[in-house]
Length: 297
Ligand SMILES: C[S@@+](CC[C@H](N)C(=O)[O-])C[C@H]1O[C@@H](n2cnc3c(N)ncnc32)[C@H](O)[C@@H]1O
Image (cartoon, rainbow, N blue to C red; front, side, top):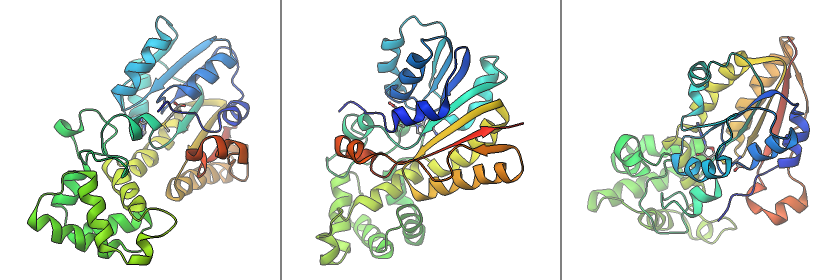
C-alpha cells in the first residue's frame, strides 16, 4: 500500500521552507514530506533525504531521477553529523523527522512488522537485518524472560507483559519462534480471554514494543536531536512527527530545555495533531503528534 504522508500541510506551513534552504528529511520513506517541501520552494534549494531502509530509497530514487540538488542516502539518521560532513554541508535550515515505519514496510516488505500477515519475525527496517543485525526472532528466542517482559512493558506499555514473556519462553523450549503467527498464537494463549476480545488486537502492543527495540528507535532519536541542533543554523527549524508517547516525551523535553535555555522558540506549545478528516482518510495518522521548534541563536 502506498504511504500517505501524515500532517503534510501542517509540516510545510510550520517549517516555512524558503528558496535556497538546505532541507533534511531524516526519514524520507516514500518521500511525501520531501516532495511537499521540494515543491513548496519550486525545487530551489538543497534536499537531503535519509532512510535506513534501502528498499524505500530504491523506489524514491526513480522519482527524483536526475535532480542534482537532491541527495538520497541509505543511513541511520543517528549518523546525521557524519552524513552532512561527507556532503560538505556545515549548516542546515530545516529538518523533518516523521518517525516509525512506513505503510510499505508494514504491508509490502515481508519483514513481519504487522501481526496481520504470516511472515518471518524480522521487524527490522533494514533490508539486510537478517545478515547484519538484530531481528525480533533473535529477541524472542534468546533474551531472558525478565528482559522480554521489561521490553514489552516499557516500549509497548503492555499490562500483560509478564504473562506474554512467560508464554514466549515456555513455547520456545518446544520450538523456535519463527513467524509472526507463531508469536500471535503465543500471545493469544498467554493473555486473559477478555483481553483477547478487546478493542485493539492483543498482539498490537507486543509487536510495537519488539519493533521499537529491534530498531533502537528511541536510542536513535535521543542521539540525533543534539546533533541536529548543532547543525541547525540561526532561525532554522526542526519538526518531529511522533507516534508513540515515549518518542513524544523525548522531543518535548529536548525542545523545552532549549527554549528554557534561551536558545529556541517553540512554534507550537501543544503538539499539532491530525484533523478528523485526515484520521478518517488515513487511520494510521490517528496517534501522530508534531512538535516544531526554531533556533533563535
Ligand atoms: C513514517 S515513515 C516516513 C514516511 C515519509 N515521511 C513519507 O512521507 O513518505 C518513516 C521512515 O523512516 C525510516 N526510519 C525510521 N527510523 C530511522 C532512522 N533511525 N534512520 C533512518 N531512517 C529511519 C523508516 O525506514 C521509514 O521509511
